[in-house]
Length: 182
Image (tube, rainbow, N blue to C red; front, top):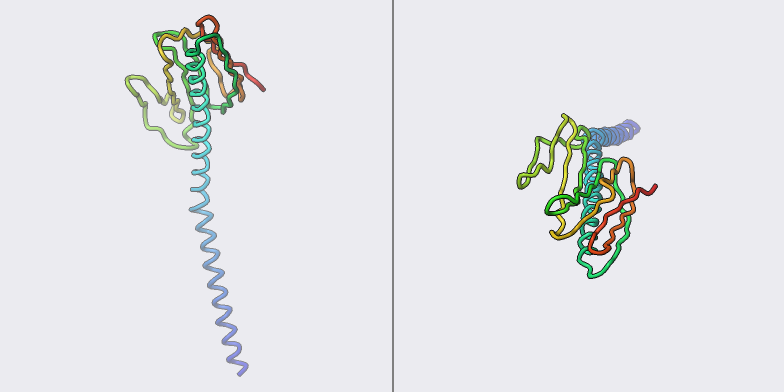
C-alpha cells in the first residue's frame, strides 16, 4: 500500500514539473517575441504622438493667422505651443501665398526605415539626406491677400520646448512673433 502512495505522489510531481516547464517556456516566448515587439510599438507610438503634437501646433498657428487676418479691426491672439526635439516650425511671408511650414527630422535607425524622397504636387515633402535621417515637412498655405510679417524665422524644438505665439493685426498687417519660454 505504501508503494501505491509513492506512485501517486510521483505522478503529481511529474504534473507539477510539466506545468513548471510549460510556464517557463511561455515566459521565454513572452520575453523573446512579445516584449521586443511591444518596445518597438511603444517607440513608434511615441514618435507618432510627437509628430501629431507638432503638426497640431503648426495648424494652430495657421488657423490663428487666418482668424486674426479676417477680423474687421485690429486684433491679437496669444497662445502657447509645445515642441519636441526633432520638430521645427517656420514662417514664410514671401511669395503669393504666405506659409507656415512644419518640419520634422527623424532618426530612422531607431524607429522605421524610410525608402526615398516623397513629393506631393511637385513639392518635396520628405527627403532622406543621410542613410539614417529623414526630414518630413508639411507646408500650410495661408489665404491670399494676407500681408504677413514674420518676426522670427523659425521655432526649433531642440532649442525651445515651449513657445509663446503672438499674432497681431495692426492696420491690415498681420505679424507673427514667437518667444521661447523655458
